[in-house]
Image 1: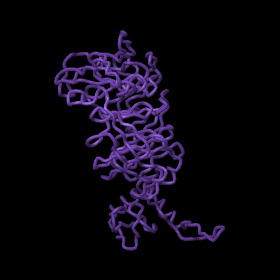
Image 2 (image 1 turned 45 degrees about the horizontal axis):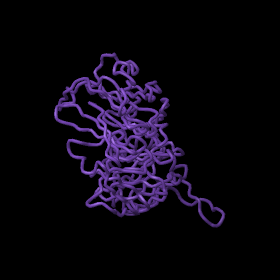
Image 3 (image 1 turned 60 degrees about the vertical axis):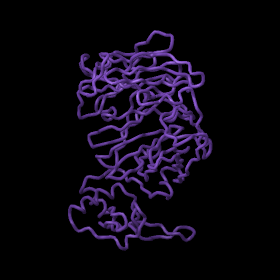
Image 4 (image 1 turned 90 degrees about the vertical axis):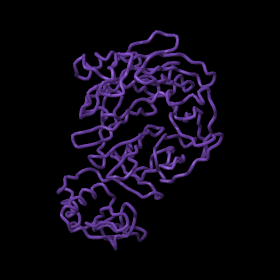
Length: 438
């Protein structure tokens, strides 16, 4: 095994270049310590490796490269030694072409760079282009997007749209209203076909109070006390969880339990979709178990995912129940198949799948589940990988998540064809994945 002199990453002794920084291995350092060699064998299971020597001619005079049996045997033995039999993950440095496995991904990823600027990333080509900002004074800080991904609200309450490489920010009826005590509903801020927003007002030691506000006219309606809330894409209302008590503690351990999940619409009586007791029974717990209920409406409003979190934190995933908008149970995911504790599920644009980080018997993974409960877990590069924000491609054929792998910030792609997570250099925080026409 070798250690790259340029970036200190582990490199196979048969590689021509470091897969991380593309530096030649001519001046790489040989690893002689047995512990370093064992770690190196684990690392090469997750790195793209250039191996072998030209062994036969192809039509046109080009050469095919094939490693010898001895090389393959040595590599395979190293992988077996550390138990790293997972899929090989592609990596490429910033500015280089994207991995071939990403060539079928459509659209553009909108990301916020570490410096705060907004950039557009082409996942298929690997290129990054900065956006120009129009009609906005100061920095544009994105907070939420409409279900169809064509409209955004920034921290000043302005509507933000994309056109080519330009960003336009236009004042709305809520411009200036987003302050420390008033915020957007975190799981789904937009309601009523993207024409309204759900705002939450929080005060110390009290539950939040929700209002739904029309972006154009400023018409608003109070939706009452809530714990969690997400806008209803179909109506002037929201899906909410109802707190059992009227005062909240700063300490999570003493936060009051939730009573139920409701669909509240302006001018209509609340529709109870499920009580906390029913949801507890659905996931196999005692009906009296005190829980917090996080609500995540689908982009179509036909379903809502409910994450059931015990008030006493446990070292496992949180179970999740997917309900239809009339309260019928579509699927139940147990506490070893649901979202990782503290993480949030993200719906695909079509409202048929959810993506979320999960903890499996072999470590961290990205779960992709259908609304009816079929789950596919894609292993993370390392067991201790930590996930950040995830977004879906506009055609629902892939996802990208920000993550930290071995103290390095990366993007983890999932595609329909690859059936694995593909490592690419981080370009900041992914905010949205928009169609190429925007």
